[in-house]
Length: 281
Ligand code: SF4
Image 1 (cartoon, protein in one colour):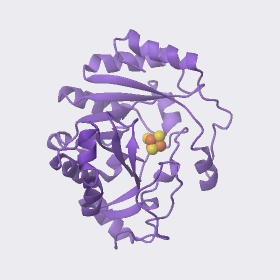
Image 2 (tube, helix red, strand yellow):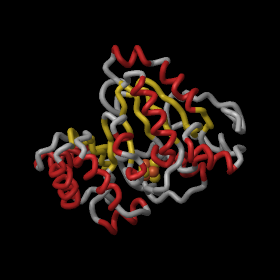
Image 3 (cartoon, protein in one colour):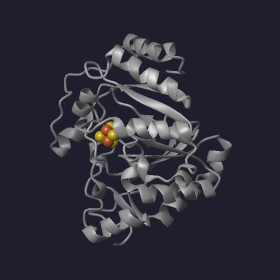
Image 4 (cartoon, helix red, strand yellow):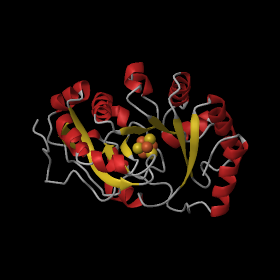
């Protein structure tokens, strides 16, 4: 497989992860995709973006991986579900991209965030890129749904300074309906992070009619508070920025009529987390 092999030349850097990107690694033979997943010497990236202020502490460089096995009904980047929609990139190239920003990130008190898609779908690549960042003395964050947390050894976890963990809803059946998978592995990963003292920021997407049951929110809050390692909860208001991707990919989007939550609903949701003793906004 040759690096950057794709249907058309597309820059690794994107202005925003909301750019629709498809089939950029589609010509990579399946055996090479499997080898890449097994070794992490090559990864598939939707893009790199710079200057993010919402993907961890300070200003971040973010690498957006492709591949996710969940099917969240409100996902705003469904083009990242398929690994081979991403650009094939060697670990050396990805690390070199990061090195360009090393000094600036230090000055700005920021760091590197690995997001997706679900970064742990490419766990070997994730481990190598996070280790490369640590070797450059760059602060590291992973944004994950936690489902494949058990793919990381305890030693590998130590290369991650902060885990931004998406918890979608508490009720098991609703979780299955919302994401297509069980919530159990996500909660197990949270408990493991707590046991090893790794800090977590919980990310909770507030979707009117889907995740706005405040009794359900209170259960997430109680769980998160009891962990003892949750530094912050981010309540993310649902939006429609990814709707066009569903349409262009020919996927069935079920949230056409859902409005973003009101400011008042966001405040009430944050208040539930705060009532449990958590820092939430
Ligand atoms: S876990 Fe994230 S990337 Fe995967 S489907 Fe859900 S919102 Fe999309």
